[in-house]
Length: 467
Image (cartoon, rainbow, N blue to C red; front, side):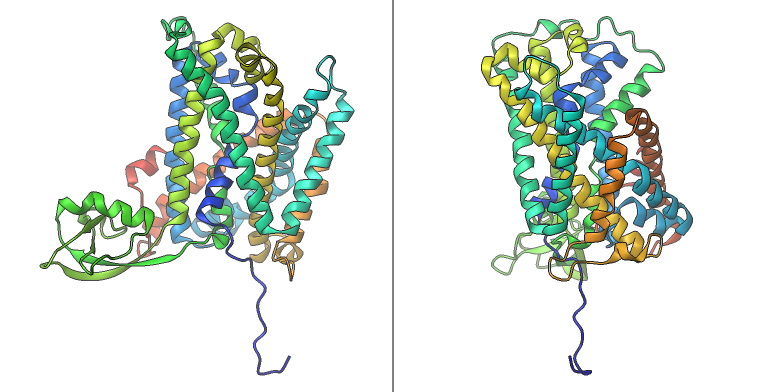
């Protein structure tokens, strides 16, 4: 190459579309728990009604947290998620601790746990009459982990496409449960909902544990922020005009969400002055007296993907639990080892054999989405000097963070064949939620520390504090 030529910089390509972003969030949130054992919430709440209330409340709280991350994702345009936001708000030390805890313990342990569920349920149809050998579970689990690592090392596009397919499988699996449940409700099978709050013996300690179980089931809404630099996130320049016309407020929602184009030269963007021009939220078809005040650049895909995903997951989780209770009593649910299997055996007969396969695919999707996202955190941390430099390298042709993916393989294998994995994960999951709380606190802190930072998407202060 001549000295006058510029060398092309190898970077991660923007290949995460809106659909792929939705699939990352849904695919990592929906794992095995909703199909296998949602009894943790029921056990700690003591009643059907209270358990459904906690499922709904956890979904709403997760949506609040996700909206906070949506604001951070549009004003801090770097990949890395938790790590990047803690670094921006509080400096290198807490960010350094966060990324090393994730690398050495949380991510390998979390991947090993969900992979074990994958191994168990992929073998379930072959061991219907006997117990599955533990060694067989771990061996097929190791194969699944290796396959995920190879996939994420080889191609971003194929990893994202497979994630879309697996997310579709998860939603089909949920619909397979919800639709018969709705039919049962239509038939009048509501005996388990009578006196839904009766027998509620939830203790002061029980409710926090119930919420902890619920929040764990919803965890994963933050993973799209780990790949911010790869999101196809077109910048939309919108004229902001001085008008308080309320008639056009709802129309601009379409502009923000669906990127409507100007039509007939008469559409102008308005802004609701209460929100200080941070995001346009109304459209006016004909405003001859409007004066353009400024032009606003806003980002669509991250907030939209988060909102769509959280609504789908929350509605799906609540309806799935309602479907369970149309056929299974609270006592039977607490005794069941795999609630979805018990539900399918009662309503679907031999078709219940498909349930373990769907659970295995669901687990594989969570594995794939988690590795895809977290490897970007390690890539960014290495770029900042908090991890070995080799982890910031990108494959020249495939444009994947190859070293950041590969480093997880031996660590996950060690966790897989170690001892009390679940107790370790429970302890460190608590630490992860502490870091998420620190990120939301950092969002509030940045509003005072850097008030002039562009915030194309902004949530209210009361929502931040409640989160």
